[in-house]
Amino acid sequence: MELLQGMTCPVCEIGVLELHQEDLEFEYKGEKIIIPQKHVLKCPECEEEFLDPKEERKIEKLLTDHRRKVDKLLTSDEIRAIRKRFNMTQIEFAQVLRVGEKTFARYETGQATQGYAMDNLLRVLCEHPQVLHTLLDIPNQQESSVI
Image (tube, rainbow, N blue to C red; front, side, top):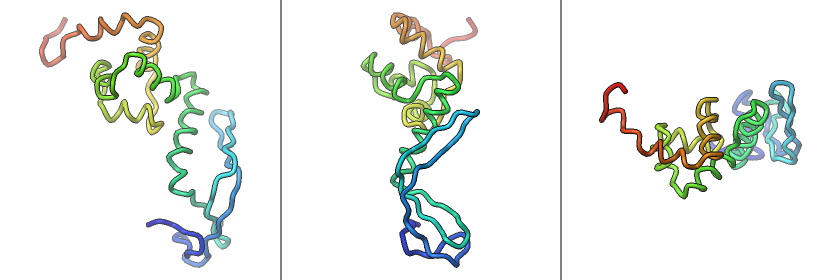
């Protein structure tokens, strides 16, 4: 259900949602990020706030990248740039990295955060592109037994 200005609040079912524009502030491990001037629907009765659904994905990506920066991980744009450097699709690159296609796509959209091992592998590929050939030469686990 899409929430609109003037609708009854779905939480308290008393207040009428009002559109506000405000800065959103988030904190992660003591590091703050401010996302300027976003539309928020607010209930004057229960004070519940709802983000504009169109903005949620953008905000989610900003927050994921903020957490990544704090944790010293590559951001979604940096991951995308590494993949594009090899002129590969998300599907092709996911296969090379032995990670699910949807998982890798989520790294680039900011819907999921890569672990430190994946981050390290991406950094190695960025600094030493010739390593890609080594990864391409590794047989699929289904085709080989223990090395």
